[in-house]
Every structure is written in C-alpha cells, then in structure tokens.
Amino acid sequence: MLYRLALPLLLALLPVGGHALCTSEGAARPAALLERFISADCPDCWRDPKTPAAAGDTLALDWILPGRMGEDAPLSSVALAEGVERLDALGRGVPQRSDAVTSRRTGQAPPLRLAQGDAFNDYIAASIELKKPGRASWRPWLLLVERLPAGTEGSPVARNLVRNVFRPDWDQATRRGPGGLADMRALQIHAGARAERLRLVGVLQDARGRIRAIGQTECSG
Image (cartoon, rainbow, N blue to C red):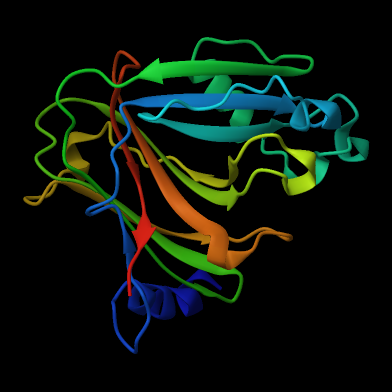
C-alpha cells in the first residue's frame, strides 16, 4: 500500500499542475508554543470559556487525550495516544480534565523546513528537513493539524487540533547526509478532518528537551 502511495505523494510535494505548494518558507516562526491538552472524557473542557488563548508570538496546539471511558468517551474520535507521549516529553502527568503548557523557544532557531502536498487517497505527503544539524542530537515532532476557527463545536478559541504525528529518529549520526537531516512521510487523514484545513507544524527539541525551532506551513498559489 505504501509503495503504491509513494510516487503520487512525492509528486504532490512538487508545485505542478496549478496546485499550491505548502511550505514553511516565508511563514511566521513563533517564539513560543502553547499546548492545550483535553481529556476525551471532557467535552465541556473543549467549550470552556476560560480556555487560555495564544499571545501574538505564540502558536497554540490542541491535543485530545484518550480518556478513561475509552471508545465511549465523547471526544474519543479525535483522541491521540501520542498526546500522552507529548505530556511525558514536557514532564507533565495526564490530567483528568485539561491542562495547558507554554514553552518558549531558546537560542538561535536552526533552519527547519516543512512541506506538505495535496491530499491523495486519505493521505497527505509531509516532509521535514533540518539543514546544518551539526553533531547535536535532535528530537523533532512533525504534526498534522487541522485549523479550526473559534466557534467550532462551541470552542471559545481558534484551535490547531493535532490529527496525526510523526517523530523522525534524528539521534543517529548515520542518518546525516551532506545536506543535513530530512524525512518524508505519508500521514493519514483521519475521518472527519477537512483536507483544506490541514497544515503541518514542526517542533524541534534538543537533547535537553529545549525547543529550538517552531515551524508551520502556509499555502501559496
């Protein structure tokens, strides 16, 4: 299946045939990340008027966590187990209802580039590249998010709902080519997501867990 998808997805990353190419080049590079976590058991948390909003230099991400009710949880259809992994990476426990964490970027941002192609057979091509990575160990998160305007299902704020996650292994020195580090992946578009609202967010952390770069794609053409 993945072999049959490979060529169309590769072609989807090329700006041909009148299609727009969505990349992080020229897009705003946030200085901070606001990550909002909601248990799938708590639909009221999604509609909470006290939901923290992102400041002007901050990008918000929204994670729905698997709940104790399992598949019977009201928000289970959009829950991702990777949200628990993300909490662990931030040194936080799983909340019963909701939690929010703000992290600021430190140091000079490395040249992180993201690109996404058109949707094809419920998949989307996504690439992440780090030029001049040096000898450091890196912890990248490549996130497929759906941009939801305020008011969606009663949300008081606009959201970037995390729909899929890819974590490239950039620890290995053998993965480093002359041009740096790069990975491409076919990310599944889960049921209910609208393809035109999908964007990529890249979060690059160093071996100490500090955020060094935050990128996001925008579409042109």
